[in-house]
Image (tube, one colour):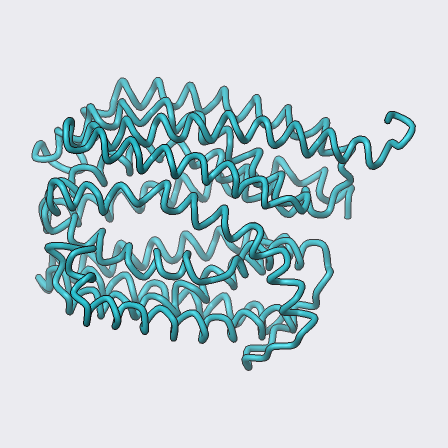
Length: 424
């Protein structure tokens, strides 16, 4: 297994990166259709509606996804038990999420949280919650089983279906927001069914079942990584709700373009992190201590080059893809680039730390970033609008980068001492 992982790391990263580039092209075309057919306000409304079920899924899923990667890769829990456990948690989280939205709707907080978004659209978007959860759980199981190419193929197919479905719904049938949401739902359903069939052939069982040992194993690891994922998610997306609060859906539409373009730089770090997580779980710490720094330096250097290129062509891309209406997104995009570069480097380290079995360090890092994001958003958005949100995120991402380096040094040195007692 070690020889297999060493020999295929670059190949797996390369496949993942190329798949993400292809997916990027498809998502840019999808985003262009949304922007040109719905305009800034419609784009913002759709983004907020889709964000709500994803936010609830991230908040309530107890870290089962990251636990699936670790436990499947380290072979600590059988795939039969992990799939049954995942389905069971999907049902539980969906029930909790729907109940929470119902409470928010009855109390009026739902309309305040997503002001300007029709309530019917939010409820329809909630159909995404169980589908999104199963997609996350199934993909993380395949990732943990080192089926990297399979996950990439599924992602590409989903993006193709999303693009075609959205084009038909908006440009041909003229269904507006309803059509865009239905296209998103349809593409997710197809991929979840495909992933489920693959896992079934590998021994997966989809009748929901909870057993104490499996629950203990998944929650013991998952909750430690879950806190980090929740905090990081809010660090990424809470600013959209604050932009909506201060500037309305049209401001969100502009900001999503800035974010979408800046986050193009994460495709390589995401590919590296996607592969290094299961590798770290199945590789000796001594080997990772020499392997990870090299990967980190190369990834960071390439991301810097990508940022320079994006800064030079960003204005042209906005006009070409989204139309001149969205040119206000260029300056915020520039403000995001430094933080996005640094967080790209942090992604390599945080995934490696999680693979070693220390996801709680990432929770501390993400918590620091979220505190900075909220404080700076509340200070800068009222004064500088979308640019303030971008500056706040960039500063917070830089702080996460610094704390990720510190955490990696602590974990790697601790494990070096554990495996070399004579060095103490």
